[in-house]
Length: 104
Image 1 (cartoon, rainbow, N blue to C red):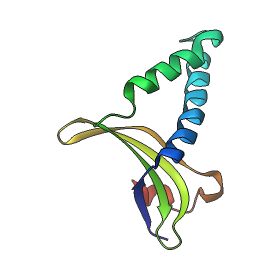
Image 2: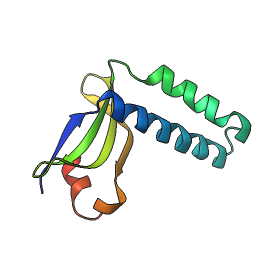
Image 3: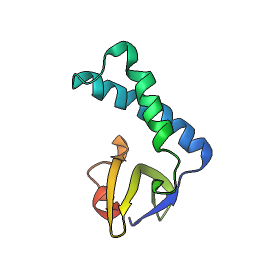
Image 4: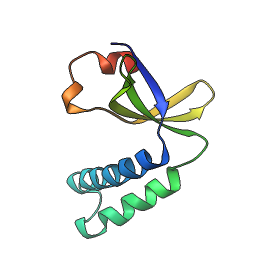
């Protein structure tokens, strides 16, 4: 089950962004960085400032055999030759099947 990365299309990005903003806000509240009442607004602002940009890349991870989505990855180019993974998730139904290893 080889994988391929393909760029997210706009509709996928819209769904991803809504989910990711909520999760990021929850993480910031749990860490004590933000107050619950401001978290979603602050998270949304950070996403708006970061995405989309020329140095950030959002991909759907697919099973190459059947083109089924198995996860997502958000990569950022920090400087030539170095990057950062902001988000990486294999959908629950596909975990522990080597998709993560292959995607990386």
